[in-house]
Image 1 (cartoon, rainbow, N blue to C red):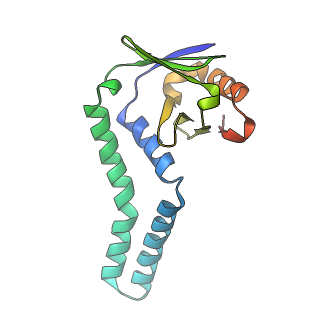
Image 2 (cartoon, rainbow, N blue to C red; image 1 turned 180 degrees about the vertical axis):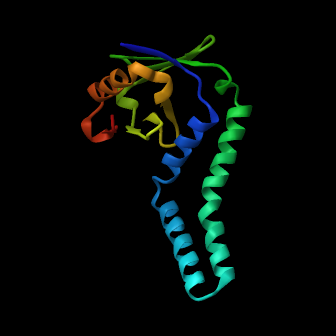
Length: 158
């Protein structure tokens, strides 16, 4: 069993949003199109095309950053620490008098970024484990997740 308390910041939300968003092929294609428009616009001296390409390239990361800031500021769940318990039953998240447990077989996948470990509990939401707040429990959290989920659904870099 692993227990930890984390307070999700706007930076943690931004990290999650980047991983989630750029995990979709359409968004990667849009970024490639933006880069191509910039390169071709510069090469052909078509400045409006290069500007449009730059706008396409920066739009998504900037809007994700703004959305992450707004969510962290407005959502009461992110104003206080969340208490996580990982055990044989699953992941239990509690805050104040509310508790929710997600069984391991309901967890879709576990991935990592340089900043966080993300345990996806639905197609659009994940439990965020910020590495800087886990400290020496990081390896234990990774081992616990890996022990309870099928290997093909776990892609966590230590």
